[in-house]
Length: 423
Image (cartoon, rainbow, N blue to C red):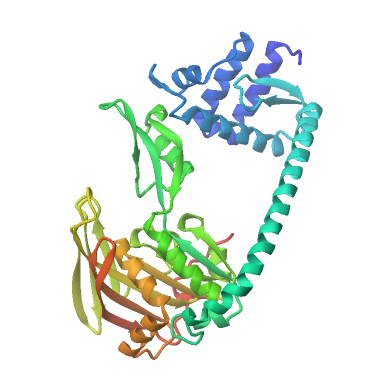
């Protein structure tokens, strides 16, 4: 579209002044660079953008680093957000075709036609996917009819002290697993990117805020991290899935950073995680009786227990070698079962190491093991905190003992610790 340079500059200035862009210097810098390229008729490459906008080195390799592509994807998203809100009445739209880095100025009507044709293609694709899913569902349903009868010996009784509320409340169940957010950071010594994790950073937005807050070089951080479910949780998921499936319970799966207050209010929750990944549940789990702490650098940790006026201290021991599957560990698992604010139930299974969580889930999902556990404890309340000590090797727990059982008062309500928030 033929526009005078001053007109294009006015359009760009209006966009960059909007809060969607004005709070992020990185995107303003990227947009200005693409604008200047459009004025002189050049078509910047991914390497050009990496070097001139993000201060990458000359050896930047786009085949192994998607840094620029991630930022371009988010830039397009921000432009879409702008034109869906503050710029919805603008006659001219700034447009960056996918797969290209040249900035264009197009009439809004043309853009709408393009988007409409794209929507049609997407709808057709989703229709085909839906038909395929339906065919697969019919196939597995017929298989299930035969499989269900074979699974009856593995079904946990629906009136046991852990799962009775989940099987009998009629509420939806959400299974949540703690995850690790990993991102790539440039190491100037090795001149390579390395995968790192910071417990204070659990999303791309938090990483961007961390970079801005500490005035770091954005070119040294690869936006577009991964929310990684640890391999150790796969077996836990398989056991919990089998438990709920045999109990004919529908359930959804989520990672800890995506858990919302609305979920906690309206669903039965099963939460399995390292105790450092509690997220918003830190505001809910009572710490009157048990307190976990750890030193990630030295791989040490301890549990402090305060029971009936007595104090106890337990040390987490991990002698696993990083270069093998040999070694011994002593882990501690805290099982907490709480009543929710709307007649729902919350069960958390937290520990220092995966060996403890894996053994706890194995016990709670096995009819024989859960019966043996029931015989060991006397539980006057449906809600409780239970501390287990698990000892063993990397893939095998050798011993599991009950250290402490604290029944929660019958009148305990999550509202005692539940924060007042607005969705």
